[in-house]
Length: 107
Image (cartoon, helix red, strand yellow):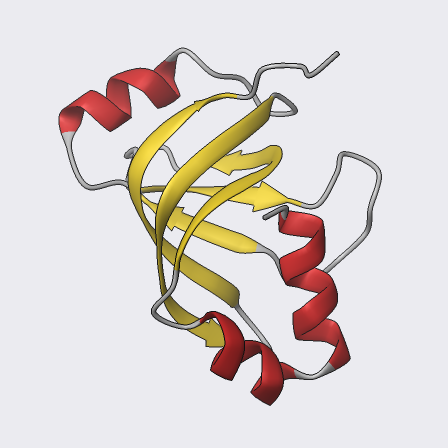
């Protein structure tokens, strides 16, 4: 699943997106947006050049994840494995991180 697809679903119909995605486990790929200064969360954007108000907020659960995030930079393509905890038309998606890594390029 890509962040772009999730945002597209949300912008098309927030109720339908919530029904389809809330509570589901996904591997979400997108562009690393903001990194919280305390390391509590990161945002995943559809792509570096898309302008959108909604996106994916991924919440950090442990120090190992914080260490992995400390090695990343804004604009990196990342993959987050986790569960969608909430969906809203204003804040977008809230995901609890199980794993986070820099995305590998597929040839």
